[in-house]
Image (cartoon, rainbow, N blue to C red; front, side, top):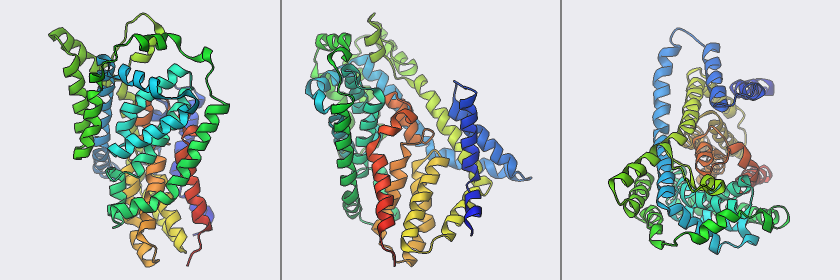
Amino acid sequence: MNWWKFVLLFSPIYILIFFILIVHFFHFQSFPHQLALFLSGLTIFLLRRDKDSFKRLIPILWKNLKSVLPAIEILFLVGMLIAAWSFSGVLGVMVKFGFSILNVEFFLPGICCIAALASLVSGSSWTTAGTFGLALMGVGEILGFPPEVSCGAIVSGCYFGDKLSPLSDTTNLASNLSSVPIFDHIQHMLKTSLISFSMALVLYFFLNKFFFFPKESSIQAPLVLYLKNTNQNFLLLLPVVCVFGSSFFKLHVRVSLILGIVSSGILTISSLDHLVLFSKSMVVGFVSETGEPAIDSFLSGGGISAIFPTEFLIVSAVWFGANLENSGYLKEILEGISALVKKQKDVIFATMGSALLLNLTTADQYLSIVIPANAFRNLADTKKIPKKDISRALEDSGTITSALIPWNSCGAFMAASLGVATIQYLPFVFFNLIHITLSVALLGFKKSK
């Protein structure tokens, strides 16, 4: 296959980029990425339409939609959890506790390490972002750090911890698909992950000290005063213990989130009217009414209604991915990539490139691990590539890049939970960016047999 034909294989990606540029050029304020994904999917459908196209599309669309239903469910639960914790005061106590222990001189590397530890313990970057991450964003707002920088540090920590946790679903998935024992898989990833994480911490320290070290005038005085007057009832940290403690019993993340919602309600609901308000906040979001704009903006949020745009984004990506598969483009791209494989390292490049492509074209990071694993596993055996190299490649691309794409379920979740658009925090997710670059660079220098 010549390179020109190989470049043309990726025409669906060019179509998507074209529509993204169009919607931004005409300043579509409502659901720009959703519209671009819908129009791209429709264009692909029309380009390769035949009499059976629609009949084939329905089962593919339903299959892909079922694959993201768990993510959609968890997103709704996180929206409810945020509202419940804001309503009950759990979020305020968490922020007050974080504000008292975090040193402003080491804030960015500090929150990155806290997020990493929480994800390592829980095995879930999503749980960490929706709980500790939200509180750490609040501390950053009080101290005057730009939200996109704080968000980047938190997402970096979340994915470092998630990647190396034996409780992580993606870590176990990559390990199982490659037939590599879980701890061998983690140990193999640790060699490069520690380097990337250390480099990220150095960059966060550098930014903290020389660029974003907040001046006294930038600290939000109303919020500091509010925290000082907040009743430091450590009993309100019980819902946090419920969420993260349940991971030790290997409960599903949805069970952990429900425990966090229910426990915060039990601690604060004292009457029927209170229960009605609590339930309402989980649907439409909690609205603070202290009279101080800075405090109200800080405390308000969450709810199922706030999650709907993100859910719409995921469903739009499912529509685009289903049309890509239905039209035959996805099969052609994977076959085109396989045709270029000549050496050992080409298989690793193909695995990582396919994982990135699937993160770009579908809403599900699990597909970005499962499909390349199935597509290149036999080829890896033929080329006598160690299985642990394949399992690491799946995570180095499939897991790591998922949070960098706005319409992927992971990127959409991080944006919805932390309140910062994916495209805004992307330049500051140093661990993810460094790690994918380092993995590709090391692979390029690796000798092939």
